[in-house]
Image 1 (spheres, rainbow, N blue to C red):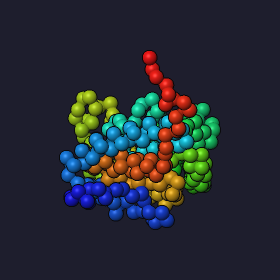
Image 2 (cartoon, helix red, strand yellow):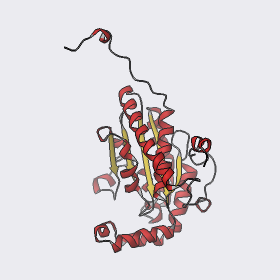
Image 3 (spheres, rainbow, N blue to C red):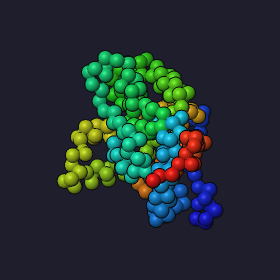
Image 4 (cartoon, rainbow, N blue to C red):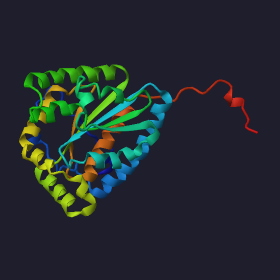
Amino acid sequence: MSDQEAAEWHVSPVHLGKRVDLADYDPDEKGGLRKSEAKMRLQANLRRMEELQELMYAEGKHALLIVLQAMDAGGKDSTIRHVMDGFNPQGCHVVGFGVPTEMELDHDFLWRVHPHAPPKGYVSIFNRSHYEDVLVVRVNELVPKKVWQARYDHINHFEKLLADSGVTILKFYLHISKDEQKVRFQERLARAEKNWKFNPSDLKTRAQWDDYMRAFEDVFARCNHPWAPWYVVPGNRKWYRNLVVSTAIIEAMEKMDMRYPPAAEGIEGIVIE
């Protein structure tokens, strides 16, 4: 890749209004980059993310919500560890959404999500999210179809509310192949320090792979908007996944057109004794 090609390299969200067929997305894609190149670019991205986060905090007008979705072993935890390392932990909040509690089930499905939306100046990262209510809930028929079907519109209204309140929303589907998932499951079984990450119930979800692919494709068709775009991120190569996610974050934050607030009047004459 030439210097000009490297400078022009960027990532794009799912096309608006276009039906997504995940079979058209290669999880082994590497964007014409070598691993060494991608890792160098990632380090530069992490430094830029730190700068942009500090600017966002100082200005106090914008917030950033990052949503990570994937199949089991898709790399959500790894992405948080290797990409979000570019953010200052004091201004970054990571939330994992597992099986709802009894109290959460007694409320509307967004009740447990809204309190974790980022305040102005901050970043929130969702490890799984409100989309579980049109993914796992749908595939496992936990509620009637008419209930989960209505949730697409609820999600769209919720995300539009956040966007209108100054929250930039980025949604990433970490796209791995079924073969790659098998390799990662086998690694979890083979290494004692990773055994805890494997749950036999993961095999049930693996058997439902095609159902989940259709559910994700419907999510991309129904809940993809300029104010809350989806990115299908090639996930088999972790080094490329990390670069894609970090680049998308930087591009979105730079579009915020942020400025440091003006200094207090009179400080130019202050001398520290």
